[in-house]
Amino acid sequence: MKKDKEPSEPVVSGKKERMKISPLARKTAKKKDVDISKIIGTGPGGRITKDDVVKYAESITEQAFVKIKKEPIAEVPGKITVKSSAPLKGMRKIIAERMSLSKSTIPHLVQNVVADATNLVKLRERLKEKILSIYNVKVTYTDFLLKICGVALRENMEINASLQNGNYIIYDDINIGLAVSVKEGLIVPTVFKCDRLGILDIVRKRTELVEKAKKGTLQLNEVINGTFTITNLGMFGIRSSTAIINPPQAAILAVGEIYEAPAVVSGKIEVRSFVKLSVSCDHRMINGAEAAKFMQRITELIENPEVLII
Image (cartoon, rainbow, N blue to C red):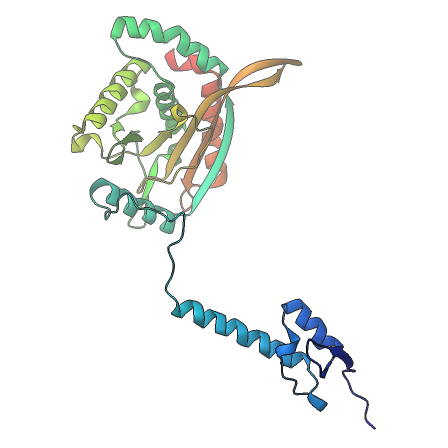
């Protein structure tokens, strides 16, 4: 007599008759939470096998799915209420198209640094009241960063570039775009020849451009021909972020808030001011070492800002 590969054991169901089910089938039924009394066995003597359990479990799952599809869907508590829906158009549509193009076609090389901004904070504190009282303009950290980037770009010209029609173009003019948030989206007015301007001239130009951006009175010649972009979200309390390159430019600098943190200085713990910066570069033109040199120079200028006003 051949020995059964799946030894069976008697199982008493809720009915009077006895049922046969293999240990493996019983284990499978328990795992799938199946009522074995409803299964018809196909094994010798009507024994329930593992395959019987699996097929029965699949059949009740399919029946439940069909029932769900046929029944109307009841209203779900906590549903999402749409406040408004409108196709993208105008400035927002242009921004969406340009950012999608940038991320899908430009390989972004991203590098981050943390700079000690203590001396920059002190310098701005010394200058802001005097500049405000004499010239009626407010000097911001963005003004210093515009000048810092102008100097760093002049010394690292490979960053002041673009890729157009397969040509790697390095620009002699350093025209820095400043990302400004407006109701319609984002606009980037340009501070032309930023490396050649003094801090006060940058303050005046930045103030003028931002005011025009808010009023919607910027002219076309004030938002074109940028060679590099700065986006500063520090005023919103953003500690750090990574920006998407503004094509056809080769790089963009994202600046976070200036914050205080303890630091070890000459063996002693002091409270210092810091700022996190992130540069995104087009890796087709700019390699890691070139980006690192650029960020190193920016860090040096933030930590030693006096050279900007000499």
